[in-house]
Length: 392
Ligand code: GLY
Image 1 (cartoon, rainbow, N blue to C red):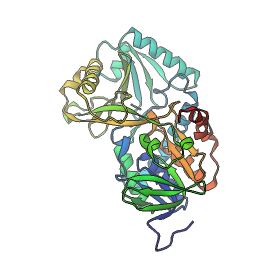
Image 2: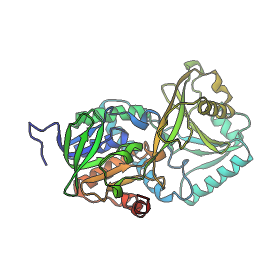
Image 3: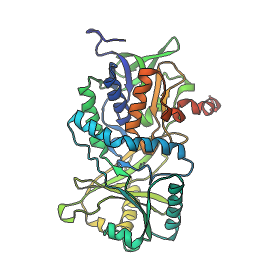
Image 4: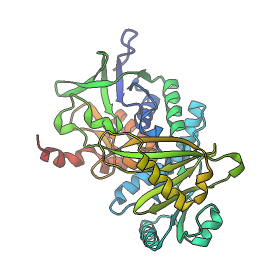
């Protein structure tokens, strides 16, 4: 389908619903492949990336039972250096991409046992990580509490600033000719058993040859999507605190530090610009994005236990966002059961990490109709049985 001068703003080859980092990277890559591409979102560059810490933590966020997801995470991590260089060039913006590595530490004997298990799993999976004593951890990061009992050094887990990433993707999309419709997508238009576009909240009909649903945690809420196609994505709330490291304290931390404190994962991500991101809670509370005293208290209490010096730092921001979680914690990528409708959603804890591979996979399937091998375990069809079992 090609655009004419009359319909340039409402007809496209590809219409992406959702202007978060996943929708934006899909649109950017599609446009680079010569497809006339549009994005519908009231606030492109918003979404979960406004809150995310931006850890590229394929190795330190490894969990039992998620080895298939690990393959995709590693594939995306491998693509990050080239992706970041290309996007920086395309947008003329710095992404805050930092190959600083990660240190995962244990505060007590239970944490240490858990970290030893993670180390064993990493080794079984052929991943690079090095066990360090508490003293070695503190030599690397002197601000750590004296009680740290040991840790894992993972130099391959890096970070990026998700807000800069989102802003750069908006600019790169604009420069590649992507059209932005700054409106809410209200209803999917379906005719003759095929997705044809969307109707926006202001009553505009946007038509497209292919529609990509990339609306993060909202992906299951678009009206007009047939029941058997609705992606099983739910919101998982994360609260995050941002501190500032004044120049006189720098470098407060030279790499990302992670820990499990009282059973909950905690991370401190130091940016080159002095921001220190502390996250995150994990709460199943529906659409609630309230920042609570309890959430902030727990983050600061646990971070203080890990690194007592944080109490000296100015508090810059508190915020909550919603991770788009799927039943197996892995994304849904590629064609849905409805012709013309593709999904790029459900990235849960790994949206920032999976941005490069998602863009490539989606561009490939949009241009060829085929899902690349790396993405085949993540087809939306894997949940088909679950969906048909759900009560009407
Ligand atoms: N990937 C970090 C988080 O979801 O909190």
